[in-house]
Image (tube, rainbow, N blue to C red; front, side, top):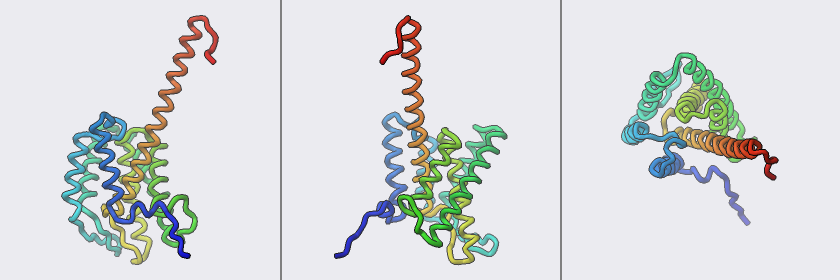
Length: 224
């Protein structure tokens, strides 16, 4: 009897479905007062709408003899991120974020290359592990949503480009495609969830520590 086992990759069979789902959730959270935590805002919403209209347009760019498919949506987002970093980060912070993005991109590129050669060693699913690890690294490097967004944008683009250049024509890099956005939004959602969980834990600890300090100041013992 045939048995079809479930894998996490089954949730993202159709390219773009995961991105659409995550963006809908982010929009709902933004309109219900969670914009600060999900990293959404009016300006970012405008950029997202522009990307939706620009998504069908893409160009083949030859880089070192390999054809790389670059979508117009990634150009719009990259320009917005560069403008944001130029206004909101000093030189030292920009260098730090660039270093973090390079390290994350190297790790993600190595994972993608490994999975394409022999997708045996994986955690949840080869289609998901890279994004989840990228989100974990971005959350470790910074807790600010804007910084995490920029780190992951550059890292995922670097990983895709490196795989295309090192595959000797067997794989064409598609930076900004729907599948590429699925990987990016998965990583960003993972980074935000980790940061929010850390924020809530720190707030809870501060509250408990404050109550204990107030109790001690009143001359009482530590509450059991």
